[in-house]
Image 1 (spheres, rainbow, N blue to C red):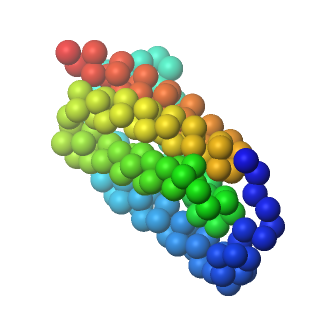
Image 2: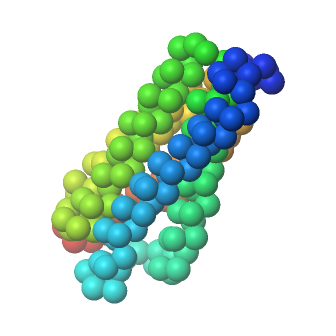
Length: 171
């Protein structure tokens, strides 16, 4: 199902669209900032000591990748909220988006602050499943919103492989 230009007009016009975009951006910045605050202190200490697989990217790749991904996620959420037509697909997509974002938010403190790599692996698997469900409804509500989440799903699958490799190496 594609959107029409009148869908945002029905929801309050360009001023409301801007406020929704700002709210989505603020949410993504908050999640990223809190995750980064938990993660950063652990990189040179605990994380540096972990047995990581040979395909682990350099540490500098992670903040760049996540910045791009949060940007795309914010646009996706904004499109779902502002551009997708009203209906169950839109509601499910937004609700599941918030579920997967909550799991995303939970992963960093569990992995980096608690050093609970197995619990983090369980969270990231749940994240993959909820993200896939989000995308299913997002594609139906607004195809572009769904496509904007594809790089995120690919990255989270890769991150789960890293998490799993670390967990199995630690035993």
